[in-house]
Length: 241
Image (cartoon, rainbow, N blue to C red; front, side):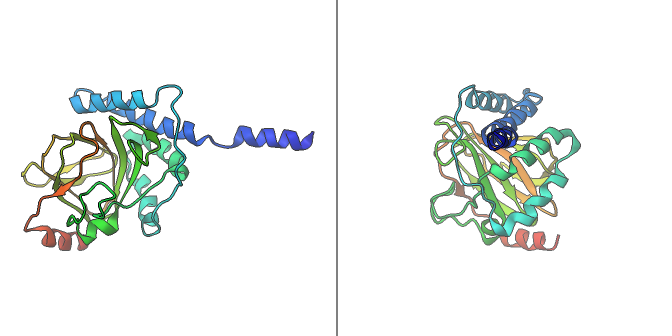
């Protein structure tokens, strides 16, 4: 009898990974509802809510953070502002269950094969696929959403893609170069909408970068880099931050 009671108690206290991941997505959708004046934010919120409708199944993927990024990722919570405390709490609860993987130019990730992503990005990025068509916690053929992390002093080089994309920035401020304009700083809580084939780049200086990034169309497309003459200098500047 004591053994049965112990097993029942253990089942009651063990966390439910599926419920925790769904709660993280629910919190993200709730935050986007406060930014629904932006069409892409409202569309993303609706897509998340559809993906987590009752009865949804969570794919069992192996939780992992690349070893060389663990220390930097642990620091991210100190840079999520109080206004996003709900996101911070939900992310902390989900952290033990999230699968992270570095993106690269092998052709197996988001870039086209052989893309010149640079050493800074190759060594400083990782993505957690929350919703999408393959290797994601929740399957969807119509919507893609990842958590996207850059360690400090990382350049995410200028690039384009066919997908309509939204960044919901969870830390900041961080630099973005959008549609050929000069670099501009965007704070935590900001939303950036990149239209299809709109050129953009990101840089993380002394603060780790974290965003919820969604593709609303053409979710199977490949990212293409758009070479710039200042990449080498920008990467040197970041190392001096």
